[in-house]
Image (tube, rainbow, N blue to C red; front, side, top):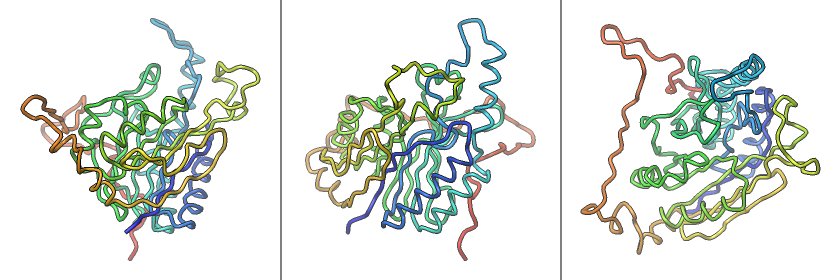
Length: 325
């Protein structure tokens, strides 16, 4: 039995999270109206990806201007039990679809680059916090831990998310394959031509359906404070490249460049079984006598309360919307 899946390639609104939420809700309704049972959004769609932001930070020195820009970005982030994700959850419930969406998550005084999976009930099923922010991302985002390396059952199949350059971490990919992932979601802002071969490799390596969603970011939409280093004639700071790929590396949709749009594909999960005839890197094609992977999935907190545990504010298992009666 085939499933209809969708990948969204669109622009979020930097420093205007309500506008990004409105775009997300509209796009979910459009995709669900076209029969999509799974809708995947790009990295940092809510909260924004501040491409070009240096935050006036140098080795051994920060400035008041940089700290003020970070404050604005911090206030654009969302909480997992906040109104923004409740709106997205309600759209998923109305459309009876599963949604994977990249957000900048605010937890206490730290931001995380997070992928949130919301089921057709409108409730959060799973979150994944980016384990390894890349380069200057480490200044603005905290590090995730093993407690959010998860794959969850949904009506469309077993769904998991790996964010942007985390996909270059072979051990993380292996941990996802070991959880019998079927729909490998890759929210990203990597719009380079080299990204598609990476996604194709993952589809072939894991024998999984890969759904890669990348943002479009127009130069005119970037706040002047970010000052992206782009040629004057270049209109797009991010040009997309979203795609859907089969377990045997075939392009089912995309890649889509230089414009917004929704990609759709009809997929058959049995194709993964067929593809596993000759490759299962965590099964018959593995060599546990030579190589083994150990994954620590215990949450790591800087503070542990031994007497009267205090629940962590913003814990992710809060529903985003009222469940249907």
